[in-house]
Image (cartoon, rainbow, N blue to C red):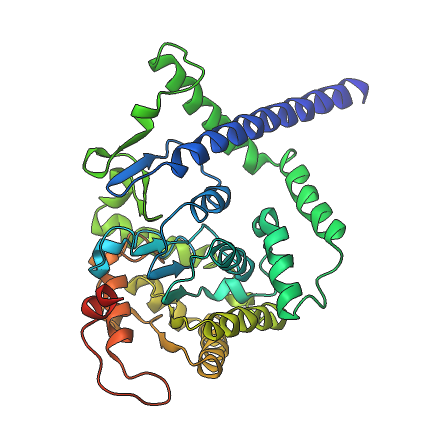
Amino acid sequence: MRPFAATMSGLLVLVVAINGLAAWDGRRHDRRLQSLAAGLRPGQAVIVSRELDDRRLQRVRLRVIPRPAVVAFGSSRVMPLAGAALGLGPGQFYNAAVSAASVEDHIAFWQLLKQSDRVPDIAIFSIDHWALAQSQEQVRWLALADLVRTFLDGAGGASGWGGAPVQTLTYEWARFKELFSYTVLRASVADLERALRGRSRRGREVLESLRRDVVAEDRVGDRRAVRADGSLIYDRAYADQGPEQVRQEAVRFVQAGARGLAEFRVDRERLARLELLWRDMRARGVELIVYLPPYHPAAWALIRADPRAAAALADSAAAVAALAARSGARFRDASDPESVPCGPELFYDGDHARVACLRAIIEGLLAAPRPGGGGPQATAPGRLAAR
């Protein structure tokens, strides 16, 4: 048993060492990207060569951007949306979406916008069903816990939050567990390999030059990058997948559980926090545009064929629709791609729609009468640009 125990202990130490080194290198990389992002100007983009802590990046950007007329909140499903797609000029739009976004992420970024006197005229919300799920573990937002706590204290919604030290310990425990994760290990090895290759290509420089990281948008090429307005440019290998490959990705997405759709139950506490957020926005004159994003037609067909998944989406839609009505928000359930319509050519995979599809949803919402009545509306780009 002793040789076995020694071997297992050695492997565990190796896993922790690799994950720890990757985490340290990743945090250093993130700090550098934050400093680069702070100086981004319209028409520029920062190249993203590896996994990005987009919450820390947004924390920096939201303090330095000009006051936008329109801000988009959501997950990776709305990240590609840029101001130009909505007919907005430089500085009029900002995309505050982050990967695997939770309600608390939206709260934190709203708090930053308020603190820096950058409250927009219009807020666009792309709401995922799993953002309101009891079964979905959501810990990434805890990196922004101080902002969330400040907002909830001011809005009278801090009950059930727990003490700040408890929240900090929860976040640190989640990070500590990652040191022992095999899934994290695979990503860590890939990250370190990319970092070493990058340094080798550049003569083993400790830091890449700013000129090579920040480029004009038209010089991004086939790389992944973040624009000055916060929107994401996908790398060409992902964006140019063929129709059959995208369809297969859509099928795999549902077969893998579609982000816990079959086990979905509405988290009433998160729903209450979202209501506090929207109420605070409305009190400051912000117009709310809310939608549930669409699925690839192949994914949607499989979801509709599963009674549990279909019922889960219906529950999610009903909860958000009721909250939107109470908040005076324009709302649309665009889960069904045919309702937009968005064909299979307008998707990157099972649940990520292309910009043309997102634009169609937002235009439709802006062209509709305001909740509670109101006169006819102008075209969406015209209304947005006028703000």
